[in-house]
Length: 239
Image (cartoon, rainbow, N blue to C red; front, top):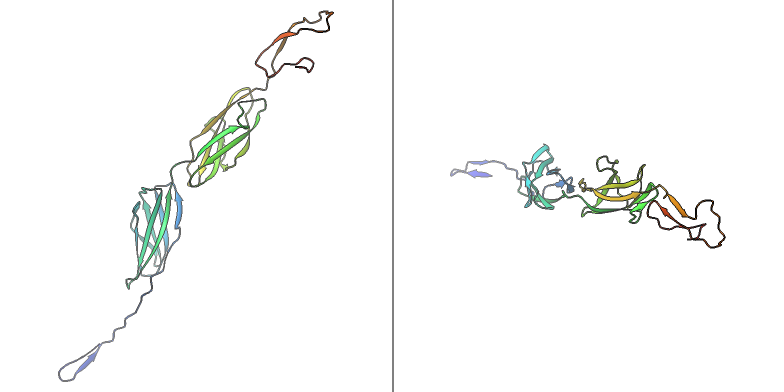
């Protein structure tokens, strides 16, 4: 820039201007996340000297922090929807703007599910049974755990639809409990099934004919009692 007065004296001042029309660098580290926690930390990279703004229609963004000259961090909380879009804007010194969107899925509901024993059996003579399991969740089912009393649980294991289970000793009604966990970490309420374990043979009492009695008829009528309901009674293998 040069200024000249009336008598021809002149002075010049140099001024350098940087022409920048390139949007600043902007990245979100965890752009898609699933959580059951009330807040989530978003982090990312940016161009040095840029300023970051974070906004959402369904969540609240805290103050943006700058751990280094090229990174940013913000805590997002107060989710009011299951699917939350978080818009991140970077503005450089020339006024150029870059925008990126993060998606936070907020899930606090456990999976739905069922449990059955050996294709729906209600009584068994074997302590070792097969559990038939099913579970569903919009964000996927990952793990399960089992219990015989609803208090003490097995270690969480990957979800499977069929697994063996021991009913333990002693006849009687046995209950099995299962819980399912989704990808967000939510456990379902327990699902319960019951089965009667009966490993004791019935007691047979033959009333007639009396033991050691003599008969002269080739066809006999045999009668008696059993100690519990049975599926069949045979005499010498014949029903």
